Structures are given as C-alpha cells and as structure tokens.
Image (cartoon, rainbow, N blue to C red):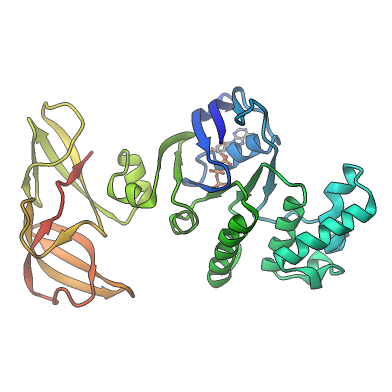
Length: 331
Ligand SMILES: Nc1ncnc2c1ncn2[C@@H]1O[C@H](COP(=O)(O)OP(=O)(O)OP(=O)(O)O)[C@@H](O)[C@H]1O
C-alpha cells in the first residue's frame, strides 16, 4: 500500500490540490475520476515526481518514496527512434548494457503484443499501437506505480474498450499497481471497484461504483456523476416536501427548515410493486430503448423525471405508481 498524506499543491497563488489523503492499494487498479481541471494531471505529476508538491508525503509500507512512471494520453514517443529504441531508451540512459536492454524489450514487446512492430517508427503506427509502445516503454522501467493519464481518450470507442480490457488483463498478469486517471465514469467503473472522485482539488469520495451511484458523498459528486434527477424541496424536522412526494428521506444535515435536493439516480431503486418506502404517481411520456434497459420519462404533476427500467416494464401514456426500494437520499 502507498500512502498519500496531506498532499497540497499551489500554483500562481491558486490552490490546485487540497490536503489529499489517499491510500493506493498494491497490485490493483485505482481509478481517479474527476471533471476537467479538477487536478488529476497535477496529482499524477506529483506521483511521477515530474512535479513537487507544496506539502505532503507519499510513502510505501517501508517509508520509501515509490517510483511512478507515466503513460501519457498523447503517447510522447520519440519520432526519430524506432519502436525498439523508444522502448529501450529509458534503460539506455540508466546505463543498462545492450544485451540486457534487448532481452527486456523483447519480453515486454511480447507481453504488450507489439513484437512485430520493433523496427517501425511512431508515424508508421496507429494510435492504439502507439499507446502500446508507450505502455511498453513505461513497463520496462518496472515502476512501483504505473500512472496512466487519460491514456485512451484519443482512441475510438471500440479500441478504447479493447484497451481497457487489455489493461485489466495486463494488471492481473503482471500484478501491477496502476493509478488510472479519467473523466469518463464508464472507464473508471470498468477498470476498478475502487474509484476516487477528485473535484476542485479534493478527494470527495473513495468507493465502489455501486456505492458512488447509490450514495454519492455530496451534491458535487452526485452532479458530476450525472445520470440522476435532482428535485428541489424543503426540509424541516425530518420531513421532506417536494413536488414529487412528501415524506421521509435520508438527510445528514440539521433539522431546521432549509432548501434541499432530492437525489434520484436514473438507475434509482424504484419498482411498481408496493414497498414500505415512499411512492409517487406519474405518467410515462417517453420511452427510449437503451439496450439492457429502457429509459423512461415520467411526468408527475409539474415534475419530469427519468428512470432506467427493465425493457417492457411500462407502457407509453400509462400512469403508474412508482415505489422507492429504499428511503430516498437528500442533499
Ligand atoms: N502551472 C500552473 N500554474 C497555474 N495553474 C495551473 C498550473 N498547472 C495547472 N494549473 C491549474 O490547476 C488546475 C488543475 O489542472 P490539471 O491539469 O491537474 O487538471 P485535470 O483534472 O488533469 O484536467 P484535464 O482533465 O482537463 O486534463 C486547473 O485549473 C489548471 O488551470
């Protein structure tokens, strides 16, 4: 395990990272998910020792600073060097002898599936191939932390999925410790069941994808994750009043009267069979097929909400009573 303690970063009078306390589990993938400008690259640069924080420490179980090596989104290969020379470059500057360099490069290229590209130049490769070279170039340095900064953002959808799958397999095969930064929640969820949410330079939550969706730590996390209905309401003495329904809700704040937001994810735990939890009535005004489910738009008085329900659960224009399966969450 690698421990980040009170990592702070300030630049040009601006706080970019604020008191980051985070554990990176060994031999696993930790996904860091956050919007553009939230400080993801800044944090990776510190882990890679490209940048020095204004405060804080990063240590392993023996109190040593782990070695982090970065794989960049734009590959950053040397255009005038062949694939083989790109991969061995890091060993060369570390004065590793040629025979050892070639032996290690052969092994890495075989693992990453680029042995047949050894003599090509970067401009003779596709984006996916270049990314594999960048990966091999990082792996050959045997980093404690493989740091991946949105590595697949410029690849098309199907190649991106293929590469994500490949990274998962590679992580298992080589027992790698990976920190993977992304602003796509689908990527984060696909890669890891440990996702850290970074917003405005702060780690807001570290949780499984399921926990994040069902119980985001705060409204900032909920809004960033999206795919949810946010319904304004009033809260007083344990009682919630909204246009959708009135009754009980989970809220950790003070009991006095205040404006709150009811959080109801599209995938929200709702069903048509009665439960002991609150319910509301609404008419289905739109249905969109989305593969494993249908996205259903429900009109309830003046409020419109979206829900993902199993295909053919409801019919257009019909009115239903929708039941929550848990007490709803309010922020
Ligand atoms: N050298 C610098 N001086 C001042 N501000 C900086 C500097 N480097 C980064 N920033 C600011 O720090 C914030 C975080 O930047 P960073 O690149 O880490 O975000 P990010 O989450 O990686 O964003 P993206 O997903 O768009 O790459 C931004 O507001 C950026 O403008």
